[in-house]
Image (tube, rainbow, N blue to C red):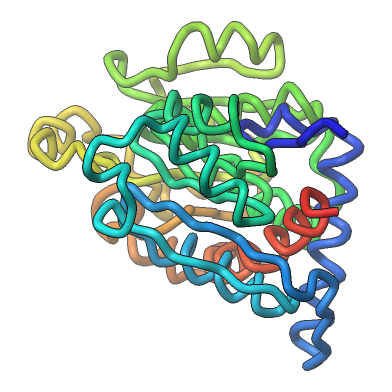
Length: 300
C-alpha cells in the first residue's frame, strides 16, 4: 500500500479536504460535549521540531492522546539530526518505530527528503514554503461559521510568506477568490502565484484587496528567523496594518483570522484582533480538531 504524506495542501483532493473539515467539526462538537473518541489506540506520532511552537505542539500532542495514542516530542537536541545525521537515515529509523511523523522544519526540502524514504505518513507542520495544517484549521473555522468557501472572496494582507503561499494553494484547490496585498518587495513567489491560476490576484493596495471580502487574514511581518529584518520590515509594511478602518472596506459580516502569535499594533490593531469580527481563538482551537481528523485519515 502506498504511504500518504501531507506535505502540501494539494496532497489532498478537494473532496478529501471537505471530508476532513466535516470530520474536524464533528470531533470539535464531541470535544466540547466532553465525549472522547479513541479511534487510534496504541498508535505513536513522532514530532520533530526544528522551530519553536505553542499551538502546533499542543494540538498534535493532545490530539494523539484524545485518539488513544501517544506523541513523542523531539527537538534538535533530542535527535542525531542535531549532530549531522543525514535526514534520510533518521527518516528510516524513526518511521520504523512510529506510525506517523510530524515535522516542523526550517526548510521545505527537509520534509520532502524525509518523506521520500519514510515508510509511514509524514506531516508538514510548517516550513518556509507552506503551512497546510494551519490552513485546514482556517478553512474549518470559515466553514463552520459561513458555509462552503467555494466562490467566496478572501483577502490576505501583509507578507507573501508560507501562509500566503498555502492560501494560494487553497484557493486553486477549493475554488475561491484570493486577493493578496503586499509591499512590492514582499510579494509571494511568482511560481506559486502562477500555480494559483485565475483564483489569485496580487495588489499593493490593501483597500483594493479587502473590498467586499468575506474573510480578511494576515500574519506577522517578520517570521521566525527574520528577526534581523524587523526594523526594515516595519518600515516596508507601513500602511498594511489590518485596523478597524480597513475592515470597514470588507463585507459587513467579514471575519478576521490570524494564525498567531500576533503582534498587536503591528500587522493587526488590537481593536480588530480582540474585536467581534475576530475568530482567532476558535481558529486556534480548530488546529486540535482538524488535525485529529487528519491523523485518522493518514493513520488508517
